[in-house]
Image (cartoon, rainbow, N blue to C red; front, side, top):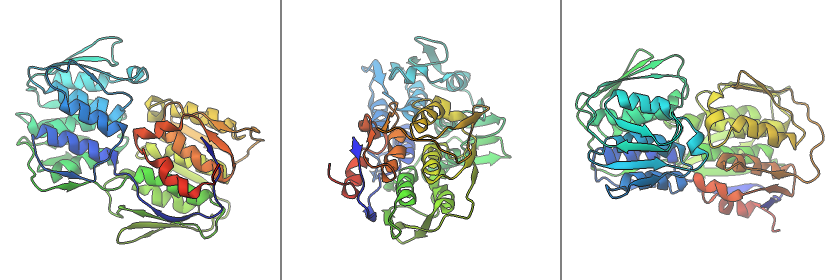
Length: 410
């Protein structure tokens, strides 16, 4: 897809609903055998994969989760509780290279019957559903929060409840708190004990009134980037359905972009983004361990604005849809930007850029966030091509349709 933007960027945008919230609520509703409606649920590859796992019957011996990492972790926990059912849980080739051993070990400690059909520690998984009778799980805290969330949501439906003990420094804690907050919305009782233990009481879930999913702050980040890179000094984009008091950790994008030339005004219906001057001698230093999904947006924005940066807490990027650190480094080289990496979890750039390629084509590595983070670069490099643009279907299927009014006709 070849992109060139119109000179003005002004409008109202309907964002997709949060897939993080949708997938959690789908799992909670299934575990609790609830019939409450979910309004404004996200519709994308990830939530459809989650729904496939939830709707699997004993006759469905193979459950293909595709490229949906969250759904793989959540479905592993769910299918482990389906007494009398046997399923093979599998996905794409990339999914089969993403580790899941930490979650499997924790579930086995609770009584789950899970075996590896291929490489030890990786999908596909052979899961024989059974009654989980344990009540304590221990995990390293620096791993993906999705492992932890998958276990936590089982707690209320386990006979003795669940205690989850975390060892080491916690990454992506906002996602853990999001999970706990949603569990409580559905009647669960949860509590942190200090900074490393979470107690979940037994008793199940209960809710009859509808639940409304809020808009996705991760998706909003690409519109923040568009405003930051737009040459339109009066650029203004209104994003509906976002709250100042969101449980989503990525809501901090408003704070981060305040340092990148974007002002956020909260309204009754959402937020309104406008341009503001960059700080003098800008430099951005952030620990993104709690917002790893914003890394690509922030790295690319800084590169386009020539804002040097030092981002830490990015260890989890290596095991996402692709190795996102390697993908960012490779694609930004095409723009004359050479990133530095340290310790696997740090990205640095000194603000100096060389000459870009004459014909800029961005590869997306089957990663939705690569496509959406690099699309706004066409504001600085008209005619930029995004290869395999359809990858946005994983989280934001209507991204290109929503962007189209702001693009020049090819």
